Image (cartoon, rainbow, N blue to C red; front, side, top):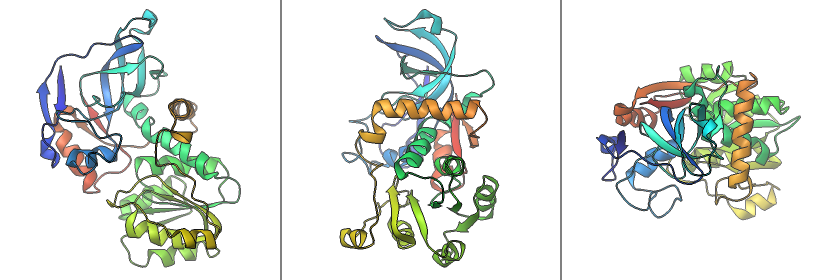
Length: 329
């Protein structure tokens, strides 16, 4: 089969397509012919080597085939798996890697059957990102009366959080994005206000939209953006870190957090609590069900042929994409 292989850490050019042996499903596993493979932002960071030895998603060594989110047709099953799964369309996440390929292996338990009307491209947009969005709304305890500030609101996770936060009863939703196209999308998805965080006055614009402060911040950017967002919280608010696309995680002053009564529920961290394997499976099923029922619209941005994975990574890191970026083998 063809797969993307990284043999040296570095820029997008390190993503090269090669012929590699077909994977074989083991006990409790299924072999999927990949119709769509989702790209996660963190994979662009792992590719550089900066997260080596830091993040659990970084490979132990090279060569490495990135990708965890796949959707496609089951072509074979391993021992202990019902043969009835063969020929079914499913979506799921690989154990650690291998999604940027024509064939991938999933656990049978984590292979979610897909309704006929849900395209594979949309299904992969609901795996890691949909699960994350569900988990963030739950972790932050978003509900009636909340004013929610969402960073990277036009991204794959942010787009779904807007919809889920509204469904959970949030009174006001403010999305941070970059450029008029993304701001228009944030408004279209249901945010009450969309603010360009490349404008130095963005905190003042958020204050104008929420004079009493925001009650929840979902921090995907980190660094200075995360710190300035923290300052916009009303006393007793919640600050949830789930990413650091700026390259640096937000560092909070414990004394200031305590003084203002801010809660910092943990989402980004070890695979426990809201990120335990059992919870992730439940959250993924919830996101897929919500999409199948029409309650959640997945946002697929650009699609690229598998061989153009380098161009896809470049588009993501240059902030030229909205929603989920997907590879098509």
